Image (cartoon, rainbow, N blue to C red; front, side):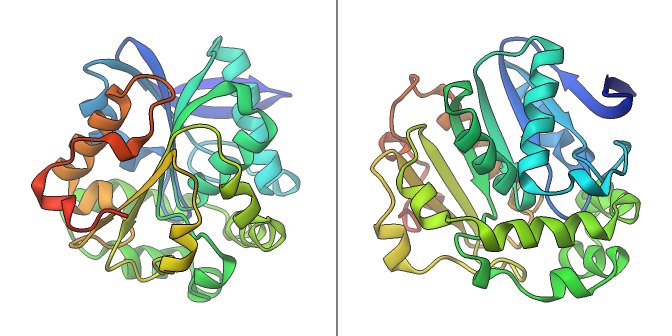
Length: 262
């Protein structure tokens, strides 16, 4: 297990591969561990990092740091500690919100983003996310598929308060304005069968800037990187291979997801 110490608190992370840096940010259920298959695929050509955010996995439980702004500060401090410069961010659920908060605070440090299961409005998040226990959330969102074992085992280690505070932070975010002003190329991935985050309305998607792109995975729930791992990894690789600054709308997408492009 790899850790860094920030202000006397231990922050857990793992790293694979060599090359340009990518940081994976987990969501509300699980920890860094469910990113392992995606990290392994990307680590062939990139240096991949994943860390446990405040309140999750093996990182310290510090309720005063559970707000999205504090999670973004954690990410910046981690990058400073590791000597990481400009990055690609891959966030899921809460991690996608942390990535958005991070780029708002540190825009010069982000080359591109992949935001999976991002609620484009706080009204699109199912209220059960805040009322259910961690075990109930894992059963609801993960099922019994072996591929989800890492997320299922990591879920009970999270502090439920970290979920609640992140959703309070979401309510105060001006998401539409923030998304409309994105300068870094950004790819949105949503699972059509996601029970916790509803698909954003077409009207909202149509207002996003030209350097953004949405793909809907029709056979995925809240964890497309686990439900349709091969497809997710291919799309991620294609996006990461684009020249810096190039819109993901120029991707040469595979036939199986062309029909669901936005």
